[in-house]
Image (cartoon, rainbow, N blue to C red; front, top):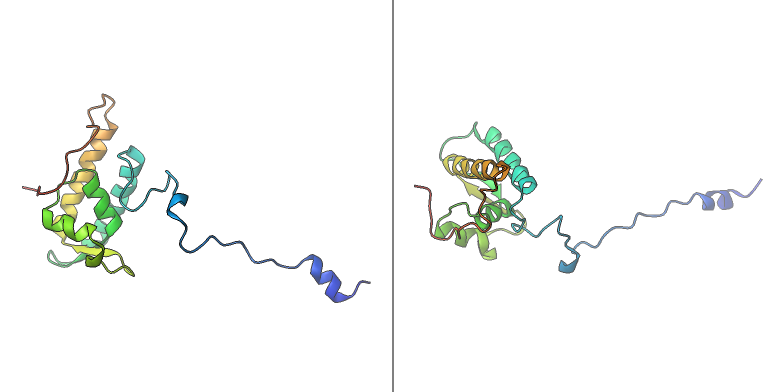
Amino acid sequence: MAPLSDAGARYAITPPITPPINPPVTATLPANPPCGEAPLELAAVQALAIRLHETLDVALHYGLSDGIDLHVCDLRQLANWGVPISEQERELYFHPWTIDASDPVFPVTLVRLREFIAAIDGLLTALARPDGATPAHPAPPTGRTFG
């Protein structure tokens, strides 16, 4: 019988190889775009629509003026896809010093969340059309508001 230390050596557990905590920017794959920079494609719009609808399900228990935290990447994505936002909102979503880096969320009202959902549902409808009626480049969102 082999000594216990030799038998255990064959079955030694090696620690898993972990990726670096902060991978270089060049390691970003097209399937995982940077924050708020996903292309205007049906799968990406559907994923964001699901997140917004789930947030609305939770937020319906809040008051109309209560803040509902949305992830800043989702807000940036909406703006980059042409969802109308005001100049003030755009400045808040895109300047790093306005957001706490340890908790990158931004509060919006229930009314504003519903406006975002209506806009994303409109994008979904346009992308699902077989006639290709979707604009190739949405209009820039700066300075526009829901009316």
